[in-house]
Image (cartoon, rainbow, N blue to C red; front, side, top):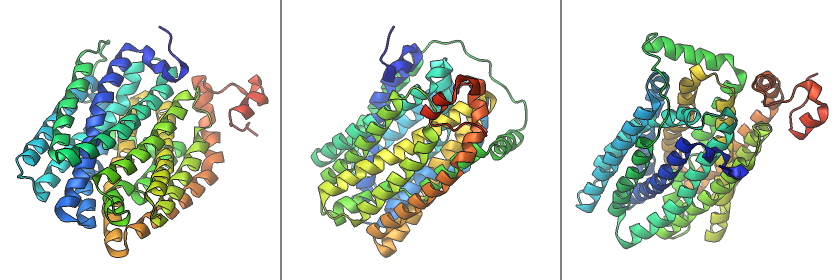
Length: 433
């Protein structure tokens, strides 16, 4: 079966099933995200509580994600995903029941968001590590990761827009109900997969020993350590979504539709970013894109803090969405390419930690900062810090390239020096001196 270059990972039957199921499910997930944010804002009109609820949904990853990586390397990842998706479905139905019966309050809502955070602490590293099992051909890994990003951001584009319409027409509860139903698609796609199961690795070592082994592996690899550190920095200082209800409702004097349009614009930028990554035929040159895209994200946040015009804010959200997704997906692709298979689950759990684990701290800091100094000041401060971080990473890039180069040569990604300096220059990889 022939596929266009941008869709070449869909040659794998299992990945096709996963892609189809997740494409449906993720639209419901984004509907729930916008409905939850708007519900908190409607119930409380508090920037601090917006940050606190976001914090409760992401803080479990701070404590559990590194340990979850040990189990991901041991468990059958396919069965684990079936369980995590089933539990997520039940959580969405519980939210729907409370909202539709009119008994929803802020603290039960926060507890259910916390429950989803507990599930995500295991689900996200499992999904990241499971990609290599679905595509089989390692040469398709980068394209599969890019298609994952396209799928997430296609849903991010459609989901909030639909969610805003549903909230305005029928209320937040129906967003939660639709999300719960949408999980059926991904569960069925997982159950339909067929592949040779790998034997579980078993309890070879104590959990803490394997956790320490994974941590030491990261510390000893400057490229992996630097990429994860930069991801954590962006997650700490750039959690802009928690402030979007304030931007839409207070600064732009809009409503749920305005929030949906803003999040949709961010989704357009992220989708464009993911498509550009899917069109790439090689991982080479992605290091430079990490720095450039992080600077673009920061500049978008600064502009968003200044803007008081809806269409301009939407345009800035597009740039911010493009930059953030490019930085995250490029980092993911490089990490999954250079990590050893035996450490994949643990490294991807720290990837989860760097995003989901650090973001709640950033969310509550951002909410507190916005409550004291205003949302525009919080956005501009975070954006300036992102730009400074991009400069730091750009200065480290030559040394990181030198360290990654032998790995790319061993994997056959990078031509040997004898292949000619011209090819190396075209691939944005400087020759060794």
